[in-house]
Image (tube, rainbow, N blue to C red):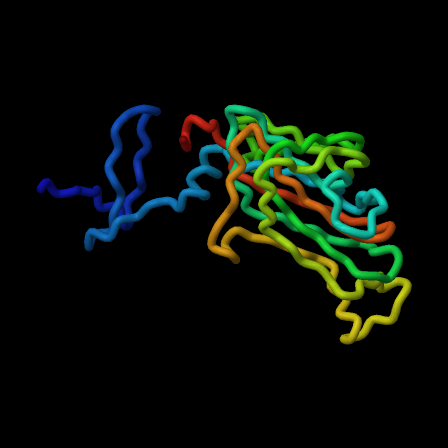
Length: 226
């Protein structure tokens, strides 16, 4: 059996080569291999994307719905045929809940969903020179879309028994005034995968709620993962 050799690069600079050329595997002087975590490698490559519904101090006024409803989703990411995404983080921040009542939020993947109404959301590459543009279409605050019809897989469900807006209600421990709900793939040691054509849908159930929603994902051609 042959031996795997790596170039010792503990203190000296790592030289780069032209695209497509062979390179040494990097190691410390004791032979410990060093490698970039896959997500970091994809980020370096320019494959990390972000969509933000609501920016700076301007929140989205969510379509009034007292329960999670995919036809009135807070955010829908539509992934076309030939593209695959790996969701990494979803951060929903409620600026106001409206009527004091139960609050729910959820996220699902699947296919068959269609956005309707709402507002187009610009997708930004998380590498400043943006070597790749997204193939996905993102819409926020849908008003009458189509829910997921195939393999509707809910991977996030969170909420409060009673949600209050601090400006209009007493702030105390009993009311548990949470306002930010975050799903991170590392928390659950997994991430769902949307192979286009398919959708990622984030919903919120509040009565006249306002807020912000950020979604981060790695986006690659489907041919790289199938």
